[in-house]
Image (cartoon, rainbow, N blue to C red; front, side):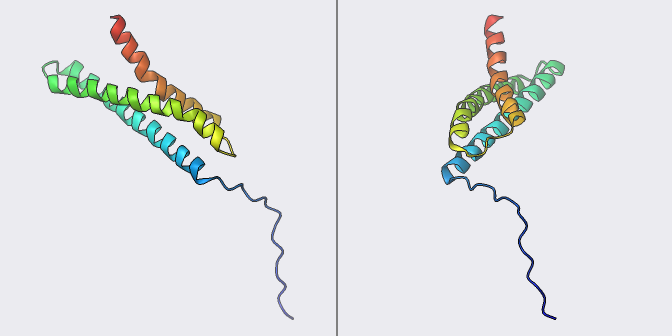
Length: 116
């Protein structure tokens, strides 16, 4: 008795995103990741500088990381509407909320430093 071919199940195919949408999403996620790493470096540098106040180079490196996180955080914030406009399937809201928080934190830190 010959084997019968199985019919494919009714799994709906996911829509294919355009290359522009994929590139925007990858750039967005890379900027969020870079800002997160820079902010972690700022935190580590500030903790180290609090324990060793004579380490001026660490304080300077922390400030440079804060500047880098502010710039990449701004890029991440500016890419959110681009990603939402170009993608067929929206990114998860928790990912977007995390990206907004990561993008805003360095600007809040910089503004608090200016108000001191």
